[in-house]
Length: 333
Image (cartoon, rainbow, N blue to C red; front, side):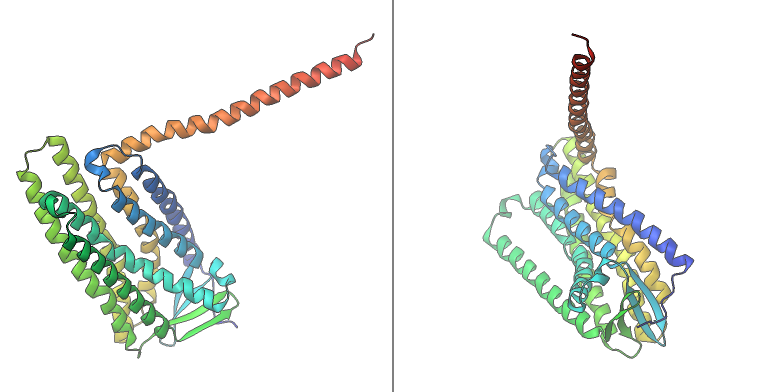
């Protein structure tokens, strides 16, 4: 079946943009996960699991985007998404599963943001209560709410897909319709949790910074805590620009009867670079990450150089033996 997909110059540029951005995102997020467990600084080491968790979410999201290689078109009021990546090799149920995973990873990248703010707030403002029963109950409840939101979001995604079929270029998917009320439901699904997330993040960041200024700790400790607060604050703001706003704008356009194709293409380009935000901010604002990276590079180079030297030494011994055999054969008795 052919739905009129045509590979244009803009699509080629979008492909190059996504490939470059996603390769950087995958390598950088993997490095952050690796370095998070090598940091020795006490002030930052306590938050390493949060930093690593965010990188794992971004890494998985980047891999899924790379596998999908999605394209968006407007066709008679319908938004057609062409899945042209490796996912196109899967059966329909497999492709649908990856589509749902892609949407849920984007939702998770927003929902996991408050954990860093709340954990910092508890360690700085209420250290005596961090291991109390009510904290564990609230944490478990928060995880349960996130799971429920992901399940409901999966339901909305599945019921809003009006068409999924194999085409000459992969899978053609109609993800929304100008008369489909589910568009506003999906917009609310992303908008409402985002508002709650940013309210929690803003409250915790304000209280933490105020407490840090009042604490009688060293200047270095205060500086690191401020750096961490700036880091997680930017991680909360930038995804809003790279993902939440384009997504809400696209669903608003669909619900209002306008073509969201241009917005969705912009979203694809921005979303790829959005996966690079977390690791780049870690390296820019967190000095312990830069130090750990500088210490790790020589070790990697040394471990990589040692096998090469062994191979070269082995080759030299082999050449010497061949020469001895050749001389023994050619030498007159």
